[in-house]
Every structure is written in C-alpha cells, then in structure tokens.
Length: 284
Length: 264
Image (cartoon, rainbow over all chains, first blue to last red):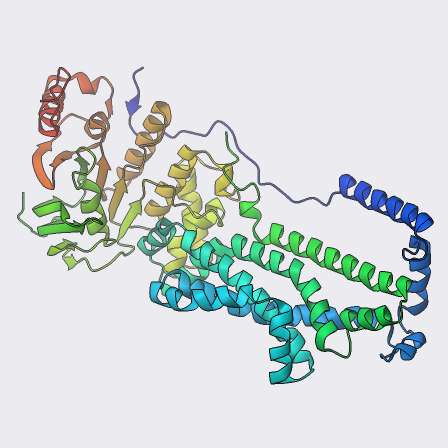
C-alpha cells in the first residue's frame, strides 16, 4: 500500500443518524398487569374476607375518591383518597427537592475535596443507616407532629442516596473533559455548568430515581408515625377499623401514582440524557 | 537550538519535572531540558514510553507545572491551560453530551464569538475534516477515527496558533491513521502562516511522514534533534529515501534499538 500523506479530504463511509425517541406500548408490562389482576381476582375468590376483588376496590375508589364521609367515623378528615394521595405526593416532592438539593450539593462538593469528603462521608453514612423508626421519634420530639417532621425523615433518606450518587458521578468523571475544556478557554463557571453538570447528570438522575422509589414508602410510614393527613395516616386509621377494601384502595392508589411518576421521571431522564442512551459507542 | 527570537513560538528554559513515587523515591520525567520551536514548525516528539515526551507536552499545555525552569509560548510564560494552545488528547475528549457541531463551536462560545459566526466557522471545519451531515449526531454515534476528526476540527476552529497533539492516532487502524494524517496536514497547510504543531508519538514512521523536525526523547533528555528535509507531500515510499532511512536509523539507535532488530 502506498498511502499518500497530503491535503486530501476523506469522507466517512457511513452516516449514523441521531437516535430519536418514539412513544411505544410496553406489551410485556401490560401482560404483567393483566396477570397480576388475574391472580388478585383468584385470591379474592378464595380469601374474600381479607382480599377484596378488584371490582370491589374499584367501586370503593369511585365512591370515596373526592370525598369520603365515612372517614369521619375513623377520626380523620373526610376529604377522600385523592386528598390523601396528594398530601403524600406533596411530602414526597418536598423531600425530593430538599434532600435532592442537599445530596447533590454536598456530593459534588466532596467529590473533589478529600478533607471535606473525609469529614462528611461518616455523617451521611450514619444518617443513611438509621432506621426510620429510630429517627422518627427524635424528629417528632424536636419538631412536633407536623408536616415538617414527616418531610424531614424522607428528605434525610433522599439526601444520603443522592449524596453517594452525586459524589461518585463527579469522582468518576474523566478529568480529560475538564482539561480539554480548559484548553478551549472554559473558565470555572463554564467548567461547572458545561462539563461537570452534564457529565454527572445521568448518574445523579439515576440516584434521584432510586431515592424516589423508596421515598413513597417512607413518606407513608412517616405519616403513619406522626401526621394527621396523607396516605399513611389513612392506612393507619383504616387498619384500626379493619376496613380491608379501603386499605387496598390507598395501597393501589399509592402504587399507581408512584409507578406513574417513576415512568414520567424515566422519560425525563431519557430525554435529558439522550446523548447517553445507548451507554456506549453505537458505531461499529 | 535554544536561542529565542521573534520567530520563536515555544521556548523551554531549563525545565525539570519530578514525580513522587507512591512507595517513596522520585522519577525525573524531564531533566533540565531546554529547547525552542519556531513558529509554523511541525515538531514530533518521539521516544519510548516513560521518556518524558507527554510530560513535556502537558507542561507546554499548562496542564502540568514544571518542578524547575519555565516555558514561554509566544513570549508569555505558561502558567496554566489556555485557548492559545489547543490540545488533542490521546483519550477521547470530545464531550459526549454535546452534538458534533456543539463540540466544534465550544471553544468559540467560551471566547464569546457570536452564534452565527461560530456556527459558520464550525461548519467550515466540519466539512474540512469530512464530517458534513453529522452536525447533529452524538459522539457515541461516531467511530474512533471520526471522534479524532471532531477533536482536530475543534482545536483548529478555535484558532489556537500552537497545537499540541498527544499520540492522537495511537489507537487507530493503519488506513484511518493515514486518512487523518491527510486531514491534519491539510488543515496545517491551510494558513499561509502555518500553526506550530507539537505532536507526540512513539511511531517513528508517523514522525517521519509528518514532521519538519523530530526530537528524540530518552530518559528525560533530548537525545537527538533531527531536521526532516524530505519534500512534501510524503508517502510510504518517502520512508525509503536514503536520507529518511538514515534518520530512522539514528532514531532507532537513540531509542535503544538496532536498525536490524533487537536491542542495542
């Protein structure tokens, strides 16, 4: 071969196209839902006293969705299932914002500062290992039975998870990107917003999604311990009265809303990190 | 080789760089080195792994500070990285979260070039490296050779008068490498006043095909400083010219290999 080294333009042999997102029906997921409904129906036939049928639960949901006068008998507000789930969703949202912001800020700060990391890692590690039933009484003692206490419990959990993910994301970000940006003229502000933020976004969003999945359950438990409203409080009150179909309603609603928000978050993540979708080089 | 004047692009004055070993002791990657590179020269730094060539390139780029001595680029002391010295790294450094065109525009954006102007400039360099039609592609959709084209287009578009390339084609196949030599030399010869290029490689043939001058590094010293006068354009047959073969023999001897094979 006699390769000439001169000014000659060369064109790549193939032109890959940008991958575009298209809505699609998750057939396997739908099959799973149908199978679960089938099992539920079968169980309700055999264990009717403790497992109400899907239809019974649907009727209960429709009857008490907006307003539930019967709730007054259980000592809680008669605002219905919608109010309970919105209250819990509000707690989850506030916890995600507060805990997420703290976790991201401290995680990114400690990733490049060894001293700060040595100081904060044990604190976050300890916070992350305290069971909610141990932490809750302290928060209730300090802040009383309030929404703040319920939100704080979940926010601490979210912060510990997001802290670990954010720290790892920046720690793992190849320094070659920052060096390259510096040689192109990027200042510190641009290094942060143009390199560190987008470079760490996939891992941070992944951490937020994992934290969100756990936050729903923790929010309900925190309401169960110290709250006057929300899905957890309704479940506690209904459990005392052995109203099985109403408990199923709350659990189902909690699951559906959590799954819907998780799907929405997955969609947002896939959109904002479209560059990372395949997780590697697509080109053969 | 160490006199500076108005034509000097890079001047290295008595530079030493030491690295501390984890288990104690130190490694001297550059030992009291001095050199000057005139404007527009295409210089290759050649040598075996660990001889200090990448350390020298990083010090010129400002990514690494010398332990002793100082480096000047266009008469200004190097104190850190800057857009006056574009770098093409050995590793893929193209930002994966920016499209191809955003990558090429990035340096211009940092320097405040208006959007329309930087888009036009980026398109021009994109065409020059043969990637028309891939403006909106993500880097993950490109091959290794294409990514190098993007990196080369980016540093040229940014207007750096000094270009530092650290074994940029080391991981590429033979054909892609030769295509990229064309791209690089075509861009280098584009301006009447050529940009100054410092190109680190361990491939002697690559250095002989590309360089005006080859500096052979060995254990933190410059073991040989060779002017390659072979006319351009060069091809693989140019490597068989007696003068080039003599240069190759000298380089091999300095690196510690016998031209006929085996270690000296």
